[in-house]
Length: 400
Image (cartoon, rainbow, N blue to C red; front, side, top):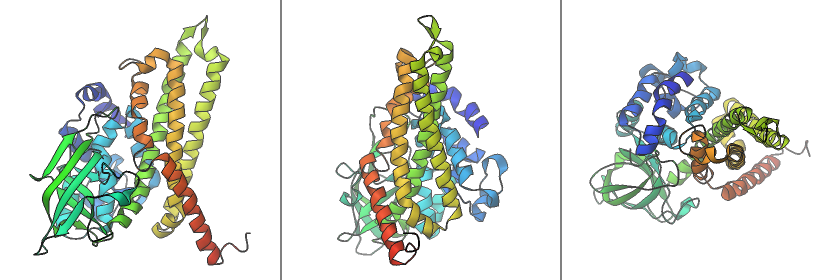
């Protein structure tokens, strides 16, 4: 994975960042090299996927686990940016697991095949101008046509990662009353996509998407009508873990580059690393990063060991807390790294290039997938719910 990234991505980063886009052929190359399917599969690869799509490294599907998934995302993020990874594989990672789990029928299987083959791209469309972390506040409406063959969709989505590249949008809509339905909406004449200028993540293809009487065949519905919110909520667990993977590697990039600079840079007759205050900064950066690594590895192991149902029950809150914590760690580490590198860390290009990108990208880590405040509160509420469930079942009485 590292060899592929170093060969195919790293030499072009500056060019793509300048252009604000990643060429379509790179996405196809990801499919050919065996990156797309494993990223869509997560910790377990279905046999029929393994028979049809390549796996990087030639690893047997039966031996694939959460640590392989971790490594793939970790190495992808060594580019020192989330814009490029999110623009390339964000849609695959965030959309295909939900379609695979809840979707049925030839049309949706066809979408999965087009995406995993590298022929088409997909993007998750949930956030709206008036609904971010409060997903229940979405207003995009899907109305079933009189002949019950189509949904007519109207509404707006905003801050949609990889939206500029997408051929399909996995879209959460409001259907009847408080019901929510998940639809795969093909890009067509009644779907308008406009680029959004962001402070970072310039290659992520972030977009404003508007549906104006967009007609969506009913066979593009994912799962049952009215259950879309529960599907998205469960899908958030995977998204938050994926973002935590990114945070960890970006923190390691900051540590790597700032240590390299501190070893070679001299000030006041000493190398920076010979200054106690600089070593103190490095020690705290390393302490935070290593602790985050240990937590992620622990959670990956638990997710592999538990059944899917039990993992959701016991680890959804912890995953939310981990995602929030990973962003907090990254903010601290990149701030200290730039302090050590000085002006180099604020300059596009040169030795501080990766740090400058990460500094611009960091809020695109802490806000998407649930903001820090919301997720920390959610983690406590989920912990209390687990306690009450286990206590009512009599599983905790002997331990208290």
